Length: 250
Length: 153
Image (cartoon, rainbow over all chains, first blue to last red):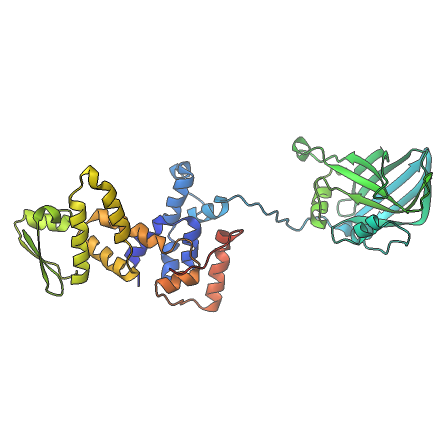
């Protein structure tokens, strides 16, 4: 049985994580290991300057050590302030100057993103839509057809009910990239964040995809659905909501 | 020559030059004691202490590697033997031995899970299940993203 004196002499030779394990052994070990003196020694090895503070510390060295000893690589996302039920998306799609799709899409519709895709879509797209990764999609009913020779553009605004403000997701972008293997036409725009976030964060894109059928019709796209994603930065529901919360809301 | 007597009443005659590594004995020798009773050190432990001091008495450069090897082997003892040595080295003020003992005992704690430490140190967990849960939660930060080996040695 180790005496208190021995433990007090031995503990300084342990790493912080090992000392933390000692706390779980029994009450005697816990009470000795809790002494902030040992944690001060550990902190002074890692960050000597922190022990030179003149004003009394407000946090224990134990707390300091826990928080900073190792870089946290896990992205733990706290629940966002915004929820999909607060949001409405205003999506407009034009060919040339004519509007072909214009709708107010409630947040929960886009959030749910699960609907039975019509038969006749290619396997790649089916696997994508049925896969577990987070995505925001909505069906287009009735379907519309876009002749390939025409330019198609989209704008997306979003409104939020909690503050009665709106933000822009896509100003007006062309679907100038058509991925024939995945049966999507893509458009994107860069997000505008509020200040001061906008000083540091840029280059994050919002993507809108028109999902089309596999008809073998080379001349036109038969669009059955729309997908929105922010894959540059956000890949889960919480991440998307945090991202939207950071937009320039006016 | 100085005579040491263990708590078991066994006597050992050792050269003064070797024994002065012990601060306690050195003081008594300076006060002209030649017979030194050590009621808090048993024979088994005293034999080991004497062995240690004999090896460390001759600190010439050529012997340094040998001394390091000896020290490493000397620490290969049971935990209870090490504890007895700590008490004795503390009482006898042999700081070099203490500086060897503490890290060696720490090595028995390093990289072990809680249960392994309890077994090695013959400790019974005296937390209530609620207390144990609490203290584990409080110290979860130490083991996030790491794998702890449960070794017993």
